[in-house]
Image 1 (cartoon, rainbow, N blue to C red):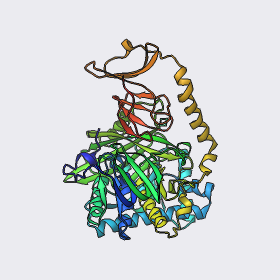
Image 2 (cartoon, protein in one colour):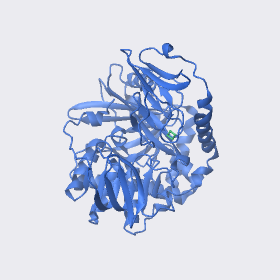
Image 3 (spheres, rainbow, N blue to C red):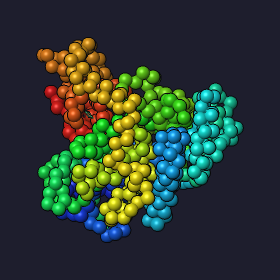
Image 4 (cartoon, rainbow, N blue to C red):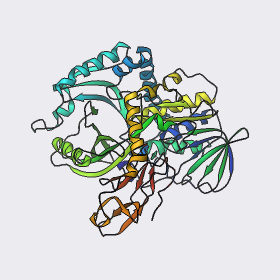
Length: 509
Ligand code: FES
């Protein structure tokens, strides 16, 4: 289930594992787009910095994204004006528009070959009752001087693809943000990492951080292999913060999983980036590189660990693709996970009011490409003691999101259920009822055991208890993973950690 971006890049730069104790000014935890961007801007000031990546550079969230470079984050600006006011919404928009310019400039200046193209981005609707929402969004963006256009059905590009078929993608109206963009995220991040290394960044792969603790004039960052980094500043650039306290981000966001397929279409490609306004989510873009033409169809977003009641997400996306291109072939499929903040605004800046010189960037709400650049600029400005005009918009220590009572209630309810009630439930299935290719929780000798039987009948047993804060895990038969409904940690069927906040593998039997 490798993403197209990672799989298609055969020649990957390799960085060594950190196997000794070192000292630096800034330790960046996480070698995705955020961590590498922070390092890039630090190098402008010639500040000594180290990147610690637990796996490979750009091998996780960034390498699995759809990589749209846009300030259009769904139907978002009317919501932002209503909840935060017009000045706030304007700043959010400007920060993201600036990020598009920054990314474009970096690509040009550093000659990063990452297939960056300028495209219009559209949010479209297929529901007559959402047409007014599109019009309201256009008005909202225009009210603070943002660039947005209302587009009628006959002018929407995707409506012209296979127009004669009974296509699921038959948009009624759309909002267009002109002059946005798309990239190959792997090429962008790995290219930027190389630039950073050439400017002095020490990059380490397979160097998993387990924790960090206060030390004299800074912090000790502790790796799984026992090595330590002494740093004056720490930047937590993992998708989900790897430490729980004092930040307590597990109370301020949840995780959402999306499915992605890449198809090879027969026929003309469309122009532009698309996402719909309704559920289930459908997100579309194209890839044109190395002489190959592909269409990326992503969406079917669902809270990680939740029961998926609709049809299988990949099948759904495949139907969408086939409605557009009846003879297309699925070349790749993968799933990805993102952090969703309770007020839908990323958390960027100080990790906590009680932990100085530790910075965080998380809760990108599936819009990580521009958000990572916004984050890198804010964090580097803060480290350099400079004011950032955007820092208040994204302030990570804000508690306001917790006033989203509906989401808070849901999170608490699910946590209590998974922490307590699920554990009291007696599993309905027995080991013999689990068929090959399936998994689930059964009781063996009075203990709850998570079981997966592969197609050959080989059995894998884990303790189905999340290593983050102890919630009971749910079996995801689509991706053959153990998923945590509380804060979204995910593990392979063998119990190996895929996504945090957990930093540990499951216990096995
Ligand atoms: Fe927090 Fe599982 S991710 S308990």
